[in-house]
Length: 363
Image (cartoon, rainbow, N blue to C red; front, side, top):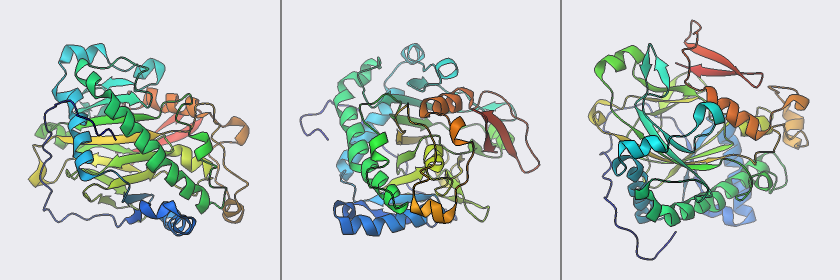
């Protein structure tokens, strides 16, 4: 990360942590510093493999970003929301419906949540090559730091994790690294995301769900932990459990692409966002992500050469010949999400077709 004199921006003060007795998911903590040696990677690969076939989420610590650098990135993450006028935001809205791209702003009330209630979530997305798109004036002086942050996530976090995913399938270490190139065509991106409090009427109509249960369509989601409790995962026993905040840690989960690559072994875990506990209501919730996707031209087929998959078996969502590329899958998922009120089954599950595959939402 840059160490020169940095542009002055307002400091974002996060909400205090919750003291509510929440039922938290019991997630594995991965010490990424161990990934620097072959012996350490072999140990971590087992832990990651076990996490991926059970919870589907895990924490990462000792990743190399200091608490001071972490706080600075959250200061930067708030700029697109607190320092940019509404008319400028509207001029930089992403072409989500037509292009299937999140590059730019997604403004509030774009997604339908439930019972006619639309979202109160705003986010701003930047390609890993931050110079490909126009950005808000307030963000331009910060682009060198954002680009450095993207590179840090890609090379110091994503690539080491991809090696662990490969080792867990007994594949060559670089199997997944080789299809996640920083300079290739694709939409791996940094996301700054802010959740705003809703009215009591909206909470009642949506049963307190802010973002309905879903899987990510990327290969790996890197979420920088923040203190407002709201993220929940659907545990293997069918119960929703909260994700605990760990200071300067990262929350990792696999998405659809990794599930496809692993023949269904590494599940894209269902997760949602709900109203925070009582002692955190009224606060905004600022989130910082790196969504990693394979290169656009990569076909999302299982690595059937994996000895692990040959022993375990492969669950296919489509025949290999019909498999979409990453570009097809991301555009298909992105363009239709939250655009219609879908019919629900008795258990609240909604279904829609994307590239011939049934995609489920849990509401």
